[in-house]
Length: 425
Image (cartoon, rainbow, N blue to C red):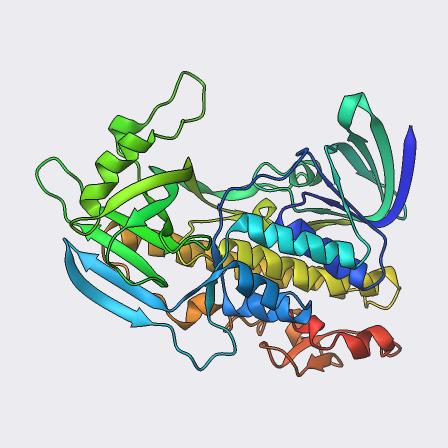
């Protein structure tokens, strides 16, 4: 059996795991990033990239790659029963706007960045167990063709999604619930006369036995006609066998129930991908336990309103990475790693509560237009224990000014000097 020794074991190589591995590799840590999938998929999934995340991408030199692979969103337009409703233009006073970027493109860009910093992904490996030891974590992995592997690390981080094996091993529970509706996504081509580059929301009032319905359309790069549509799936199209997960409706079924929600004359064509899903509103009781940490969907799951989920996970990773790097070098005060959970859980809780409220408002067709909150530039850690610590270092750069962290007196080495902007996460 092969034994590997690293500084940090990261489980899950989606955007959050890739970003965390890249940040740690850039700071010189030895990282093992594993994922049970054998190869990447090419589904749009998450789309929205906020202004704050683009700032982080800029720090890693990949913001132009993201811009080239995505499409800018210039505003939001609503239609109520076919008539134009309220609209909003995204302000151009920010360094970055809002970008529509398919998740598979974000993963491609992040993995290339990881490679440039000397990291790789070990595909086909599953975490089977782990235990905390006196000075680290001992983990067992299973891989292709029955191979097994032992890993010794200082820390373990679960970026492995809603069914997180790391969260289960840490015995941390998710708190919250699930919306009763089943939702459908359809990534397809649209023929219509609406301007490109806007987020569209179409509201149809209840009538007869038909409930009120809202459909959202977001442009996807690759074709000027490509959009991802999402709405509640009618019960009549919910195809579920006994004990099975729901299967997506056919293209003809999607056309039949989505087309009446869209402007007159719209024609749907060439479906690239579709999926059905339930929406959870869940958050873990703590983002950390001992030498184990959680980030992204492993820690919080919420409605996709505002496109903030992937962004919040990336910012979890950004916040955690520099703290782990300092801890690995023995330069972190005792409370620094603890600040990760207190800071990021507060952000996650706010996210779950506000997106749940926004989804309820959207389903009731009372939803306000998005605003500055959705840029994530207003996120702050003021009021958390770490920000109130006396004798702390105050960060002056980045979007979150005035954040303070307890640091030892000898931490002002090259990494601190080079990462003052990095540490604003």
